[in-house]
Image (cartoon, rainbow, N blue to C red; front, side, top):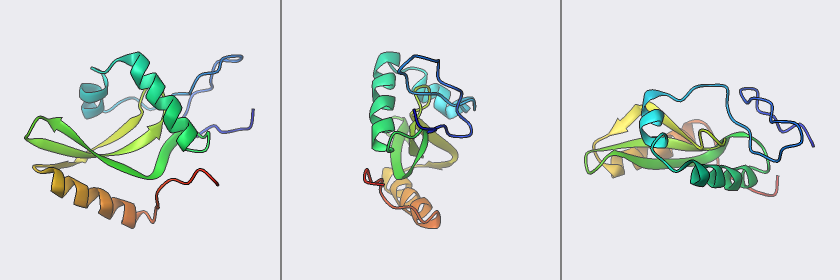
Amino acid sequence: MANNQHPEMMDPPIGKSVVGTSTKPLNELEKSIIGSLDKDKVNDLAKCLFTLNNRHYGPIDGAYVVVCTVPDKEWCVGQLNADRAKPLILFEDKLFKTPEKAQIAAMRLKEERGESVPCRNN
């Protein structure tokens, strides 16, 4: 297997076909959102994101999303991440009172970082 290891990812088990996971712990917001999700479905999502990310682990450049963190009250900017334990990176410093404001912040972040949408042909 080619070295697709992201610097903050643990080594996958030898002989196992599993998507790796980060050595960086979940932040409090991620714990509250991701921790309540079905682990099998999260793992399935991670496999899809790994494929989308050209079979590389870690954050997917240009793949920013808006996540509702408190129903009808608060939205957060996140980034898709090819990681079985943390398929979504949530930015605790990017919380907003409307989804529109969060969407604008996500687009600004993408522009500031000079990222485009993921491309599977790299």
